[in-house]
Amino acid sequence: MAAKDQASASPIKLGGPMAWYGLFLVVMTTAMSMVDRQILAILAPRIKADLNIGDAEMGVLYGAVFGLFYSVFSLPLGRLADGWVRTRLLSISIFGWSLMTALAGFANGFGMLALSRLGVGVGEASSQPAGMSLLSDLFPKKQRGMVSAAMAIAVALGLGGAIGLGAVIADVWESAFAEGNAPLGLKGWQAAFLIAASPGILLSFLLLKLPEPLRGASDGVLTKPDPAPFRASLDTLLGILPGFVWFEFVRRKAPANIWIINIGAAIAITALSIFLTHWTNSLRPVNPTALRLGGLELTGNALQWSITGVGAYIVICWMQSLALRDRPAFAVIIKQPSVAMLIAVAALQSVINYGIMSWSAVYAIQNFEGSQTTIAVQFSILITLLGIVGPLIAGPLSDYMNQRFKGGRMYLALFALGVSPFLAFAVYKAPTLGGFFTWFVFYSLVLTMWLPPIYASLLDLVLPRMRGAVMSYYILMMTITGMGMGPYAVGMISDVNEGNLGDAILSVYWVAPAIVALLAILVWRIPKDEPQLLERARAAGEAD
Image (tube, rainbow, N blue to C red; front, side):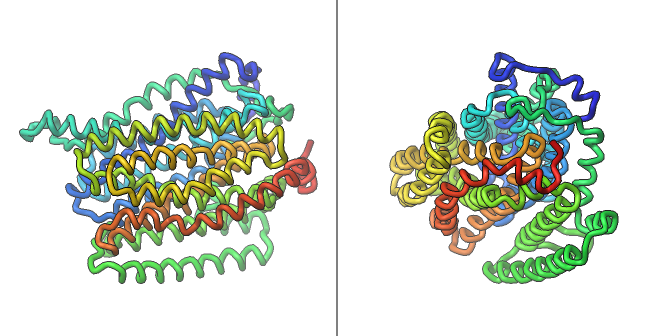
């Protein structure tokens, strides 16, 4: 952070009352980000009926449109979190994305709904980088599993809240204004967006008043003040945007191989995006226009692959610009094997998680008897309770296992992601709603144990000044791979198979063997990489 901001930082007692209050606010902020992000999923049937769009287009809205801007802006905002006041950044961010969530309440077409999702993505981009960095300086290092569990619980609260809140508000609104006399002519799903946006305003004010802790205090590695965090954040943004990155290359005198790789990747990604657009268009007899840009009409498939292609190119640009701007961070975040494999696990698992969670409530509503609201509320209660219980077990357990065994946290992640695929098949092949919910209890309880050990391990493997950056990298890969591909893939397979949503959901589990293999390697690799962290950073030019 800048020198004057460093001076305003407070030596908050690690794990003290103010730390727990800060944890509460960050958890609620993360929960609200999930509500505003996920509420689209439960409102999908109503939105589809009003806007006349298909499952694949809903997948694009839920995934790629939101995901591109969420992941792209997580990089400069993550860099800002590594240098500026994190409490202020979180306050401004939640205020902004709450306004953009409210905008969806006035959407009367795909375009405005896409604009709202775009804005929510930009606003939420700082939530995890700034939140996890902040919590790392509020609690001792040995409690990082517990802190990570709290963040995982926040995700569950948000997921459950989005499903239950969205369905109940929409249903109550439509019942109250069945005669067509609703204020401003708003439909039930529009009212749900407006009401879901309101708690963010209060949270914004409370975060603004939260003291900023000293960066690196929990590790005993106090970080030097950042003299120009906003300039560094802007440089990060310009260093990843197509076209602008070339000016960055010129300014930093990039060698020829960086130019060759960058331009070659741009050509290859463009060609692949065009091929995938034509291929997926051929899979459906009807591909409605999702977006019109002047005289150019884009199908949902074209929009999906265009956004995914841009995201993939941005990953390459960011890695290359990081190598030119910050060699120690590049050495620790990109070149360290354990970090690379942890990011790969998170990205692949997010294909499964987003693919399943974006469609599971819709699957239950379509395949079992009962009202939309009743099933949605039951589903939201299950998600919330299990999403709390699983991390509450996994967080402290991962801390304990990490102190007793080398690579202990990865044993827990390996169990969770190795067993959950088998339980998923029992869930989505259950013949009754009771069977579906019964198996879902076991499935969700096991699945929710994977995130605390992954979060805690990522924080352990980087320096304090790099935590915002590594969480941004996590978000970038998780979003482009998982959020960008999971919901769309399930929606497309469902459309192609005439609405067989259960098989479409299970189809995303083809990535599970790769996840298990990577975790098995990490059990051995993390104990080798973590002790070499400072040596790796210093060898690349990190000052003490």
